[in-house]
Image (cartoon, rainbow, N blue to C red; front, side, top):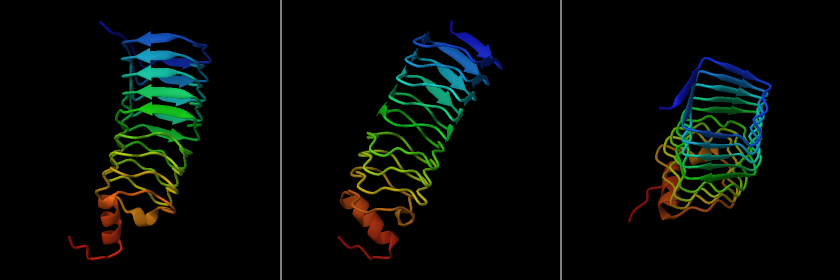
Length: 198
């Protein structure tokens, strides 16, 4: 049975290289915690707060950060493999370099984040707030972007081929050199009022 922590505060702890497996944290606060090179597997963080935490070079497998609040955290060289970050908020965080392999990041808030050049192919980003985010040269092939907000988002030279874009107003983003497939190009043309015929 999973070990569960609820409503706990962890402050100034050194968890360098620690391995966490099948642990559940509910509404916990992590402040100034060092998780550098830590590994999580099947861990659930539900409605937890992370302030000034270091996730540098950490590795996360099938871990869930549900409705988490990340403030001034560093994810330098961190890896997320099949993780669920639905409803989480990132503010003033270092997000690159970062390795992401699939997973669900639905309804997350990444406003103003620097994700330039990241490989985000196949990621579920539906209904997410990507306003003012730097996604220049990012690879978003086959990503699910339906309903995402891209106001003042930098998509310069980003690869959106195969991405689902229903409800996305690409007119609000910077698209210089952005790579689109036929469906993406038709979607963009229709946004500008073109009457696209087969």
